[in-house]
Image (cartoon, rainbow, N blue to C red; front, side, top):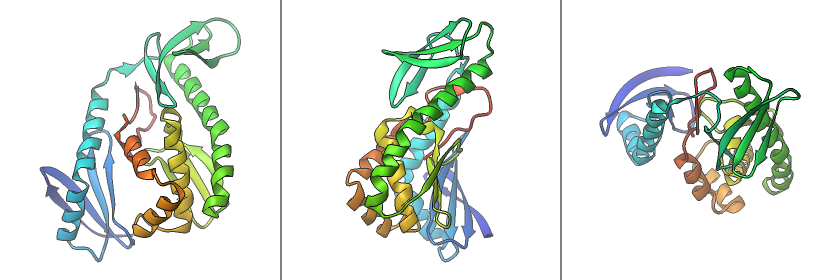
Length: 247
């Protein structure tokens, strides 16, 4: 439960601070404009929080630029020629209107979207999102099977559209959730998030002990994390209601 709030300015950026009864400090950058919010343990004072923000200032500025650039992108209309990422590779969309089952296929550098004539953009987008969900469902079980015995935790998992996280977990139930947007990113990113969420079932928070666990499980996790954080938040801007995640 929040006990107090404050607003700091660090490097010319306004930072909303909410003090909570939590163990670790968390920094988030949120769409659409790049609002910065810090959830801080009540034991920390403003100066300690300011120092923590300064240490993450380069990352914060990078995330804000990406959000602001995304906001300037032209809206996607789900028509021929638009670019869409699949597992980190940019594909050009080709819409094929014909009778029969609506579905999605990959053909070289093209992403083929088969729909009935006159199918609205919202329905085309939902079809693509469902296809992405199936892509994740085909990859996640292999990663779970690989990493459960290594990390030493058994889990249930689900795919979810999330606004601000690539993954989340519940320590009590042993369940992890993975963001649907990961189907757009490099497969290394999906593996990093799976391992990270599994590791957090063993070690609460994001401190040094979790980092040591990750070093043992996935020595290049920092490179994967930075690549994911440095990638575009999304390759297309949809005018519907899909959330935009930030790392």
